[in-house]
Length: 108
Image (cartoon, rainbow, N blue to C red):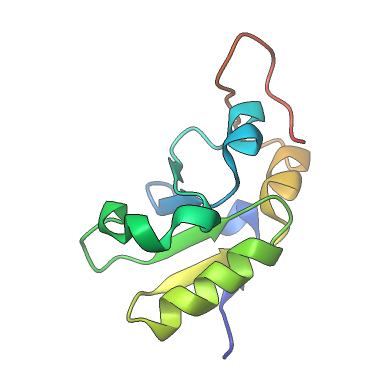
Protein backbone atom coordinates (compact mmCIF):
# COMPACT_ATOMS: atom_id res chain seq x y z
CA UNK A 1 0.00 0.00 0.00
CA UNK A 2 1.32 3.40 -0.98
CA UNK A 3 1.71 5.96 1.77
CA UNK A 4 1.74 9.68 1.06
CA UNK A 5 5.02 11.14 2.29
CA UNK A 6 5.87 14.80 2.89
CA UNK A 7 9.00 16.52 4.12
CA UNK A 8 9.01 18.14 7.57
CA UNK A 9 8.79 21.55 5.90
CA UNK A 10 5.55 20.48 4.19
CA UNK A 11 3.68 19.63 7.42
CA UNK A 12 0.96 22.28 7.62
CA UNK A 13 0.81 24.54 10.65
CA UNK A 14 -1.82 23.24 13.03
CA UNK A 15 -1.71 19.70 11.60
CA UNK A 16 -2.19 16.67 13.85
CA UNK A 17 1.46 15.64 14.22
CA UNK A 18 1.89 12.28 15.95
CA UNK A 19 5.41 11.35 17.12
CA UNK A 20 5.75 7.56 17.31
CA UNK A 21 9.29 7.41 18.76
CA UNK A 22 10.07 5.93 22.15
CA UNK A 23 10.14 8.01 25.36
CA UNK A 24 13.91 8.64 25.43
CA UNK A 25 13.82 9.87 21.82
CA UNK A 26 10.86 12.14 22.59
CA UNK A 27 12.59 13.53 25.69
CA UNK A 28 15.69 14.39 23.66
CA UNK A 29 13.74 16.62 21.29
CA UNK A 30 10.37 16.84 19.56
CA UNK A 31 8.22 19.22 17.59
CA UNK A 32 6.45 21.61 20.00
CA UNK A 33 2.93 20.80 18.77
CA UNK A 34 3.42 17.03 18.42
CA UNK A 35 1.44 14.43 20.31
CA UNK A 36 3.53 11.54 21.66
CA UNK A 37 2.17 8.05 20.96
CA UNK A 38 5.02 5.51 20.74
CA UNK A 39 4.64 2.93 17.98
CA UNK A 40 5.27 0.18 20.53
CA UNK A 41 2.07 1.08 22.41
CA UNK A 42 -0.04 2.63 19.65
CA UNK A 43 -2.55 -0.22 19.38
CA UNK A 44 -3.56 0.02 23.02
CA UNK A 45 -3.75 3.83 22.80
CA UNK A 46 -5.72 4.38 19.60
CA UNK A 47 -8.37 6.26 21.58
CA UNK A 48 -5.77 9.02 22.10
CA UNK A 49 -5.72 9.84 18.39
CA UNK A 50 -7.67 12.96 17.39
CA UNK A 51 -11.31 12.17 16.72
CA UNK A 52 -11.89 14.52 13.80
CA UNK A 53 -11.38 13.44 10.19
CA UNK A 54 -8.24 15.54 9.63
CA UNK A 55 -5.11 13.85 8.34
CA UNK A 56 -2.58 12.55 10.85
CA UNK A 57 1.05 13.40 10.12
CA UNK A 58 3.21 10.61 11.53
CA UNK A 59 6.85 11.25 12.44
CA UNK A 60 9.66 9.14 13.92
CA UNK A 61 13.43 9.55 13.86
CA UNK A 62 14.19 8.94 10.18
CA UNK A 63 10.89 7.91 8.56
CA UNK A 64 10.89 4.11 8.78
CA UNK A 65 8.64 3.53 11.80
CA UNK A 66 6.38 6.40 10.78
CA UNK A 67 5.98 4.83 7.31
CA UNK A 68 4.93 1.51 8.87
CA UNK A 69 2.55 3.20 11.32
CA UNK A 70 1.07 5.32 8.52
CA UNK A 71 0.57 2.22 6.41
CA UNK A 72 -1.24 0.46 9.25
CA UNK A 73 -3.39 3.49 10.11
CA UNK A 74 -4.41 3.96 6.45
CA UNK A 75 -5.37 0.27 6.21
CA UNK A 76 -7.54 0.71 9.31
CA UNK A 77 -9.62 3.70 8.31
CA UNK A 78 -7.42 6.65 9.23
CA UNK A 79 -5.86 9.21 6.91
CA UNK A 80 -2.16 9.09 7.77
CA UNK A 81 0.72 10.85 6.05
CA UNK A 82 4.34 9.90 6.66
CA UNK A 83 6.83 12.66 7.50
CA UNK A 84 9.86 11.53 5.46
CA UNK A 85 13.27 12.04 7.01
CA UNK A 86 11.65 12.22 10.43
CA UNK A 87 12.93 14.29 13.31
CA UNK A 88 16.49 14.05 11.98
CA UNK A 89 15.45 16.05 8.92
CA UNK A 90 13.16 18.24 11.05
CA UNK A 91 16.18 19.19 13.18
CA UNK A 92 18.49 19.67 10.18
CA UNK A 93 15.88 21.93 8.55
CA UNK A 94 15.94 24.29 11.53
CA UNK A 95 12.30 23.71 12.43
CA UNK A 96 11.39 24.31 16.10
CA UNK A 97 12.24 21.61 18.62
CA UNK A 98 11.75 21.42 22.35
CA UNK A 99 13.10 18.94 24.88
CA UNK A 100 11.68 17.52 28.09
CA UNK A 101 14.31 18.10 30.74
CA UNK A 102 16.97 20.64 31.55
CA UNK A 103 19.26 20.32 28.53
CA UNK A 104 19.17 21.82 25.10
CA UNK A 105 17.13 19.86 22.58
CA UNK A 106 18.99 17.39 20.41
CA UNK A 107 18.07 14.36 18.39
CA UNK A 108 19.38 10.91 19.28
